[in-house]
Amino acid sequence: MCSLLIMFHINPIINKPHCLDTYNFVSTQFASIKSIGSFTNFSQISGQDLITISNVTFDCLDKLSEVSSFIERKLTDVNLNELALGQIAKMSDLNNKLHEQIYLFNCITHDVALLAKDTAGGTMSQDVINYINFDIINKYKQIVFKILTLIKKINVYVELLKPKIM
Image (cartoon, rainbow, N blue to C red; front, side, top):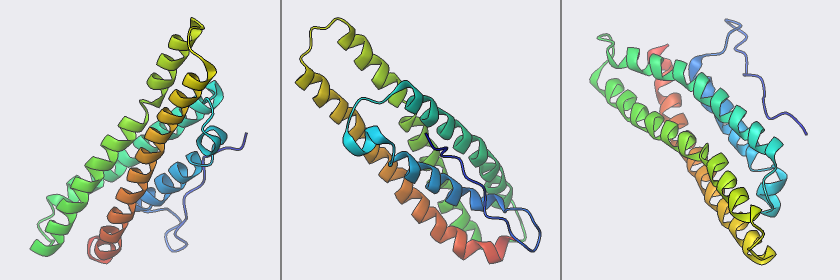
């Protein structure tokens, strides 16, 4: 299994990534989740894949906490004009929605555990189990697409705001 964790793009000028680069990290992580075998062939998600997914989501949320702090500090920056503050507020709303979607995505472990519990009795046919797997994976693929869409929207604000808030 290949690792889904990647390194940040390092800014050569200061040799340290800016916290707003975290969105690209999160985007790459969730794009990688889409390529997990069970997500591409709609099969049962293995325990190892669930651990990987859980680690990725927690790592992304941990890195995004720094971004949230940065955004909150900028929302109270008296040196920024009204337009910039409005754009930061919109970015903050999108950032909060991103957090919600990542938390929602992490519920995949619960849904897979319920399926395992339900199938342990052996009363379901393989067709029903396959359909439930398909339904679970389809649901979480849609959440991944929502996450990636939110990041694209956030990155528009990042590009507009970076020169003003650096």
